[in-house]
Amino acid sequence: MRIDIDCLRDVLLYCINNLDYIENGYIWKCQYVGLDDMYKSVEFQQYKKKDIMYSVLKLKESEYIKISCEQPKAETYIDSCLIIDVTMKGHQFAENIKEPTVWNKTKSIANKIGNHTLHFLEGIAHDVAVEIAKQTISAMMQQ
Image 1 (cartoon, helix red, strand yellow):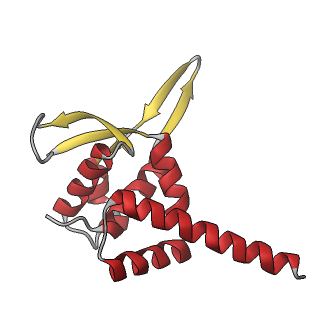
Image 2 (cartoon, rainbow, N blue to C red):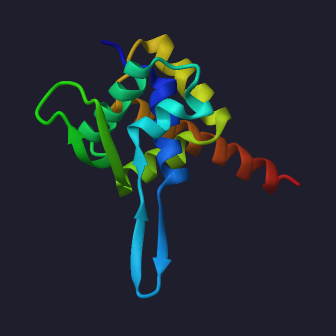
């Protein structure tokens, strides 16, 4: 099965935007993201359920997210789970890919090279973001 990199990006950004901590007196309550939440969300209507599920699995496998209540356990698929956290590694990747300009350039480079691994995408996105920052700094310095 192939990774839909747009779906993967949307899953990661959705988790960042929807995971939360709610203070209840002196106790914190976690607002988790369920796999079923993504299936029902308007943001994911363009994706097949299996692409969303597979993206969650690959983000977990690559240590970008943490999940619990995974059902069934020890399988190559999941019927349900709760995404309980985005790791620091996940946040760093998301920061590099959240801007559409960076993401589109990253995808374009990955498509030309033919490499869509998460590690490679992460490296390209970082390099693209740095290059855009350099161009912005240069333009500002000339003003």
